[in-house]
Length: 284
Image (cartoon, rainbow, N blue to C red; front, side, top):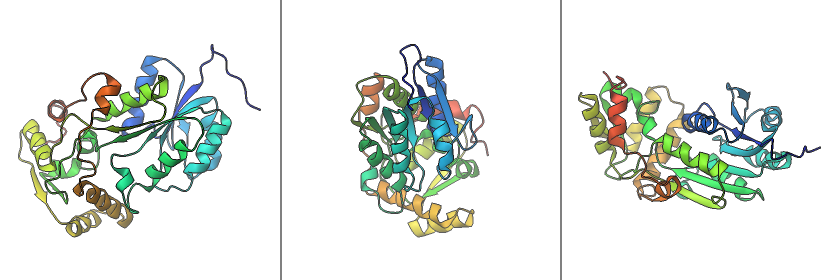
């Protein structure tokens, strides 16, 4: 039996991936705004949620009227989760995807593509967010260790990337979850300008006050380095597929979607890098 919600008891917002880059920032924003209760869900978070354990889905969905959907790499459970969510009373989805995902091959982004399809077919309100690579890939995980070691080597060439701050992505997600006017929109979220990875590395090196070099390598060499560092082969293949998408130019265009939704320009990499460097993040 579905419990009718009153205007005095706003439905909750379920945030999946609540310990991730955008998820934890989104939870903080929503709670600061106080518009609705927030259920922060992940495998190890406040609310237990595991894509591989469907018995965790219903408890996480209890009382939720909106969902921030961060899809798993495996697309197989996504459709069933979305069907269960709508049956439980969810009336709005905001799905995190990726810029250029419609051009991706089989080795990258299948979960995100399935998430897009599932929310579009859900029969309720949906918004899709397609951001570029986050600034935070440079200071939280993916490229942090190479930068600290003084060498970032990637197979990307001169194709530029309009990197975006995960804080801006979270801000867009918060608006789409709590405001009207975003239903049916697919937002291509970019930063204010496109930089090559060599230029981004130089920006970070100058902020850190130490030499950090960018090195262009082949996809085969990149895969070999990832495997040598202990990355599993599927993850190495997925990263190589991501860079193939970038090299083809499918993620290079700067858009004004972030600016239009937020009402101000998105964050720029250079001042962000100075703030992060001041914490000693990239010290050798």
